[in-house]
Amino acid sequence: MHKENNKDPLHGITLEAIVTHLVEHYGWDELGHRININCFNSDPSVKSSLKYLRKTQWARDKVEQLYIATSQ
Image 1: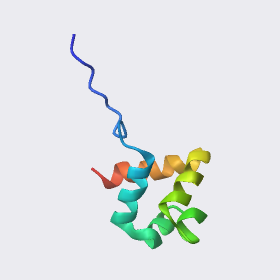
Image 2: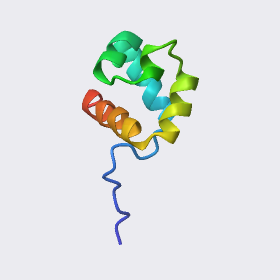
Image 3: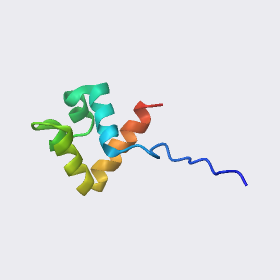
Image 4: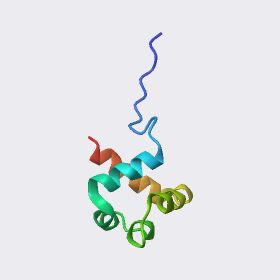
């Protein structure tokens, strides 16, 4: 049997890697403009963003969707 290819574009990518990539690509200002959440707009850091995104599924979904759109 063939090993099934994982179709999940986020497979094996950590949330930290996603946030870091988006910050490098957009910068905090543009990221906060695209996804209006305080952890991107008020004294942003990767650490504080990870803490918030791990607790807030809707915000994490938006971040993951932006990452997928950005990395294609």
